[in-house]
Image 1 (cartoon, one colour):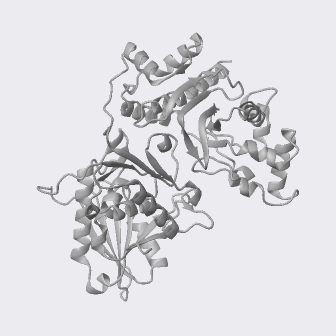
Image 2 (tube, helix red, strand yellow; image 1 turned 180 degrees about the vertical axis):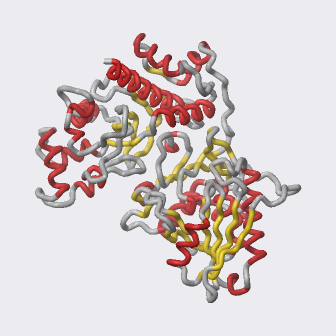
Length: 507
């Protein structure tokens, strides 16, 4: 009995954490979130957390006005989500309707309203790697690949999945099934301790008091329980501010820069990343990637073109621009390269960190401190005429780059490895430091390149914040031709790099 009660209480806390993460969206700059509801009354089948968006956000061509979150907690990692589990009521501790039936019921209720919507399943469990669901579910934004699901005949693996779901919902066609599934997102979420850390960071960003480490009482979770008990369960920003002021949890905040234009480029998705409702304009490249790798039919050249076209259309001299970059490092570099200081366009990156997001200004290089980079040269082959540069800021990459160069870069003669004193997520603390470090990298490369190396493209590898990559790109024209490489974070295999973009840009 005690274990069952503990599991139910943990599940309530898990739901409350996600509720407050959505509440934080109410206070984001340029937020489109107008209301957040816990245990919603209007849609019974998916009622854990509901988010109203005004104006709607664009999701793959559809204007989405409402998000419905189903939060499913598990006490351990001893299970996974499968195609079959979605049809089993026991998967959500129910006796009658499965999760897939709940989604279908919600779709039937909402499809006639004229509003766009999406159903988001939050769970610490992930799709089983040997189940067909793992092939269908995107690790970036959780959407199901309906093109892949539509492939194959009735006896193929995907045909059997279609039949399983179609028959379970008593549908007569695949089109009717796809009309439901296109709204579904399945997202793996971190364990409770990381949710606590993530929420604390978001609370500080939006002006609410974080919860002290080791505190026996979590005031936000207690408030959630009270909201449900009293039936006061739907809130706008003003409502939450008044409640937090009354409870001594409101600190207030100043927007980044109210008059700045806020932009975003996204090529992968994070759990609390909602740039579509906090930006004036954004470029979504999720459909160009399968997790961190290029999707079939996509090329880095086409991505470079999309990035530069977006920046050309969204920026102009005379106004401050702030750029969010939940994207590959190469995209951050390309953004800076296109927006180099000579364009006269004022753009600064917004850098996320353990304490929230911060605008990274360049500052001035006058009176800068002594170099923080330590330098070493790694010989690869005697007849090589290219220089590879490895920058270890957030993690050490010397070994991976050396493996890759030996295996796949026959023209590289040596590696210039530059390392910060203590590589880690907080190794670069500000925009001023990042810009200074980027300038030092350029200067160091200029100082060590031989004549042969100057006539060949420089190969660039780094593990560093995207704010730093943006500044490196702004200064990158001084390097002449260069080639960028991306690490395969999905496999984490030794030396798992692949070439991405090349500069100068050629259209």
